[in-house]
Length: 84
Figure 1 (cartoon, rainbow, N blue to C red):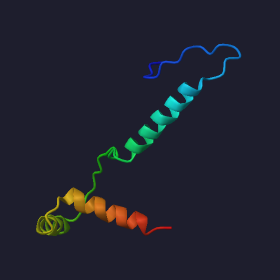
Figure 2 (figure 1 turned 60 degrees about the horizontal axis):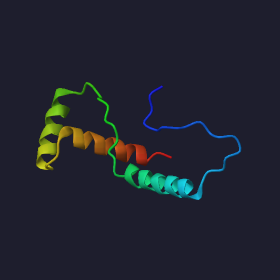
Figure 3 (figure 1 turned 180 degrees about the vertical axis):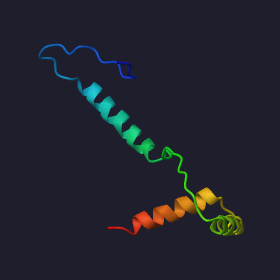
């Protein structure tokens, strides 16, 4: 197993030092604060739509200064958020 964390075997009866615990908590807080700034991993979505709808969607997206993908993602998010 390949991991970025290096763990050494625990000594029997050894308590973690305060310095190590404080460092761990500090690092964990930093990871949590950075987690909110990451973008979600995108996955492709393919669908078939009527040619007229596609043409109108492209025109409307251009008028809004957006891409078709932006519009579809926004509509999906709004639809999902409206559901209980």
